[in-house]
Length: 152
Image (cartoon, rainbow, N blue to C red; front, top):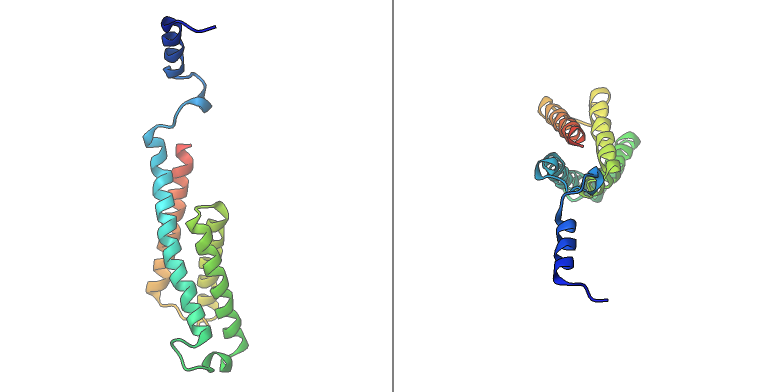
């Protein structure tokens, strides 16, 4: 049975009204702000960690050093470079996807770098500038994640 124009109008008005159910309300633009900023930050970190991971592969393949130089280094050095060649790129993919596991893998990679730099400076050489840069990145990430969680 066809509906009259008055019935169609009242149905359209009912659809356009705001629901009183929270899960059916459209998110407000301010609620998306910190999540968007966190996603952009994770993508920026992803680009940086892709470069870091590729630089480890360059060491393995002898791009910046003479061919065979990597093989003559100690086993600890080789294992560390291979570890960072893998974990940095895995973390970069997870960061680009803005997934939780990406953030966790990135934190694992950063903390591994900082711990190895502190206890084995001959294998992972990091100056005070690099350490402070990594710590700043971690603090900003945790701050943005906290702000994003508070909005929800």
